[in-house]
Image 1 (cartoon, one colour):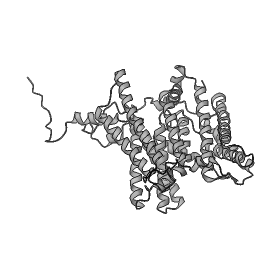
Image 2 (tube, one colour):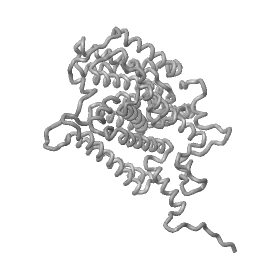
Image 3 (cartoon, helix red, strand yellow):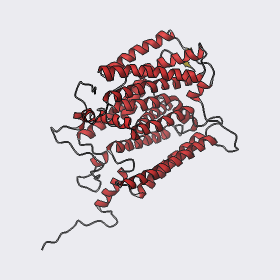
Image 4 (spheres, helix red, strand yellow):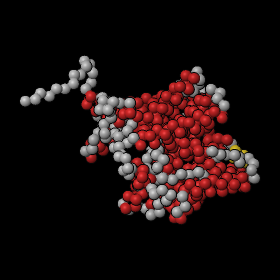
Length: 460
């Protein structure tokens, strides 16, 4: 008869299985997947960057006026990141977004200033121009089979030249109209006798209600489908954390100088985030985008119309680029020949910093927004600290390189999270296997290897 002994547990310590269980539960807070864990890590990095600049600038970073200005100044990057993440998830890239935005901007400026077109018709015209350009790009990518890199590189040159040709390389002013609110307007500020903007507080309250209802609905669906659910305490921590963030942001935006509130460009971004999060998570076309980017061979065999998916991704990107261009000229009160220069790089960097995979198939709208906010905070914080613009570019480049390097390193070692790197093998801090992807044996084909043949573009 043998006697089985267990390692003694130190007084007051938690057994290893219980600790692993808790870490697995925390991993389920935002979905439990590798992409969600990466997104959660980027959110932590954003908070750390904000706190660093808050201390380094003597509290200027989180002043209401500065935060409002930061949102207005970077709204175009946030909008571009939403479209770019869909393109990158599908396994492509778009280098033309800055030129498309600039070309749309000059046309809309001329329509408002010279043709005296009403601003709603001018906005509709801009979106239609973006749609036509996106259809042009989508045709070449999806139906002719030219790689998106080449198509959009050509588009970058074509529409940059078209912008300067149409505008004669001069600045086109925007007449005073409600159109300008698209780039720098605010919610109304009724005098309610309190030092806060009431519409902004109401908007925050709506956000809190949505968070609570969404979590309750999620648990109800999981219970009905009898799938594994996160413990109740995890949902409570998640909701409390999100409610605290929304409350703090609402008070921050509502407590600015009189006449300011949550900016209209921020509302545009929030609406787009809600719409595209729903599209990517809860619609057929959204699932097909992930399928094509992850493994287009399997997607083709499953009946996915790959040409339609690629056409949608390219056309949608140009429409959002047109919207970003209109938001920018509305804030600048004019359209100039230098608009849109380098925007594609900021959008691509935001998507990769936000956790998207270079090989496609992985990424989220929320993650891309977080990545864009990282870039916005870096730009703003370094500017407040008086760092020269050349060094700002160097720092942003290093941040992008580190973010993508961590992603590649994670894939090569089997996709395990950073927490598990510092844990002992089999130790108390090892994450549950359901959170991490299995390691790939040397010589075995990985998901990245089967996503697309090298040098080929899917056309099914």
